[in-house]
Length: 238
Length: 129
Length: 125
Image (tube, rainbow over all chains, first blue to last red; front, side, top):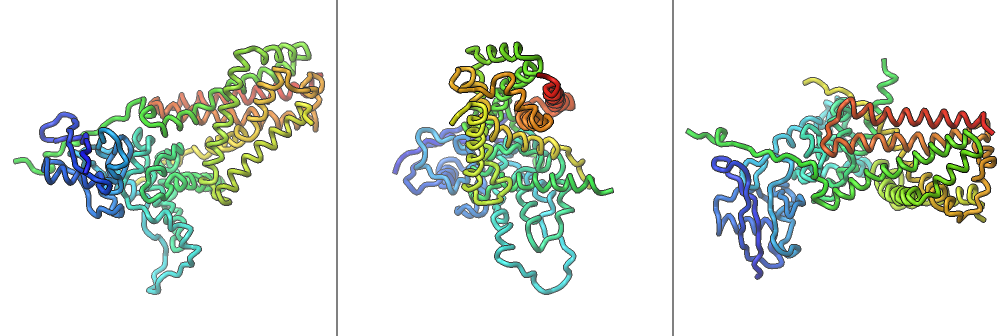
């Protein structure tokens, strides 16, 4: 067992004017994750520490934090990979409610804005049929766990919270590529706007930090192509 | 009495103007965007060259002398490096925007095009071969 | 809920993309030759002498010169304008009509100048 030094950002909305850092010494071995360490702090050292977590296995998307300035899932980040002080902060670009808990309202609002559900006029009772090839077209983009790390990585979202952002645009693309869906026209207005796909400058950091390696940057920029096509088509419509 | 809602006081951090200095990934992004600055210098040289070409042989001579100045060569070498860095990043991003073929094929193909153009120009303008 | 306004970004992005291809494929060889090898006399640059270069660019009713100017000057100018416009926003100078006009306007003006000079070449020599 080694002793690791954690510098955790604290913020108490009822008493603090702004966030501050608190040092904790946490024992760990080669299996200890950042989440394990934070839970150790909460359970053994300071029960007032607030943090979100659930599955511990990188599928629920709850435990996103900044580790030394990089957005990570706490449960998938291991103390053994770090030297010296490990700085833990809440996810960047979101308002901090308390300690490591951020306000994800804007993120959720952007997800809803792209109409993330099948839109078609099928009213039958038979299940849709889809070939493996049709599934492959959108499957990667459907594996998003809504963890929000990409929004913390995206400087365009940091500069402008009205930007729809990587996950939301990727979700729109996921439905636009789904053979069971006919709702592309309904989604395009949001994507064609300056806060839609055009808010992106392909920094690409979102794809770097995505814990599921879904390449949201590719999805957003493929959406730019779709939006450009839509633009040209709109020039020929009365 | 304090309700949970009234106890909220979210702290919204603001991104500073130097956000891009904070991580090497962002710095590389800004460097990539900045490759257009040396390019603009070279484009300026080209415009000057076109002007001189249109004015006559004597002016073309002075353009040649201009291009031979130390600071001009230095800036144009920077422009050359910038064009290569731009090419590297652009070719890598292109297959992600339009996945027309396996990424490696597309990247290799684009580099081949650049090499062929450079070789072609060397043959044509440089009397190479 | 009102639909947000359609952005005109596709125009600038298309020019940026085309210019980006030109910048990546045509400029490296050109800069190497015109900016380095030719000034340092490392080439047998017979075609870079006045009369020969003029004839080359006047080829095909001046279409060679036109193609050259579009591919190597105009499109890269718009590529640069787009990056500078968005770069200014990245440096927290927010998007404004003035910035947009300055960036794309300058690119357009310089492109016009380049095309005009190229046209003059048809009459020169």
